[in-house]
Length: 164
Image (cartoon, rainbow, N blue to C red):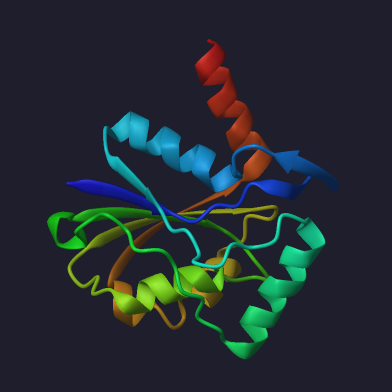
């Protein structure tokens, strides 16, 4: 069985260099599409204390969380990970790494013997980003397959598939 677990943030985001309010976060859009294609369950990681709606405030908070190595608490998830062999894990790239709420999630669960398919949205597709992110998590995750995507290109593909 396969599960899609993701963290996403709507509201004010930077899109093509301009601030734009999003009804649905980029990662959620992709996660739901993957879940639909695979007929899999999608579960969102939701921080117990929500991130600010304003883009600049989120940027500052994410930087502080990274610098202080914070582990924000998330709301309980309604899924038993033991029943899943493959897990798609998705999130935005914040300050060259994963959002710290995802670090909390990864550190609190045993993922040995799971297959991970990682999807990260970022403006620049660089392997270096993933190697930095998982330098400390490979021991937790075991085997990882990685997919990076450029947000706008993938969103266009998804939207076109819904239209066509």
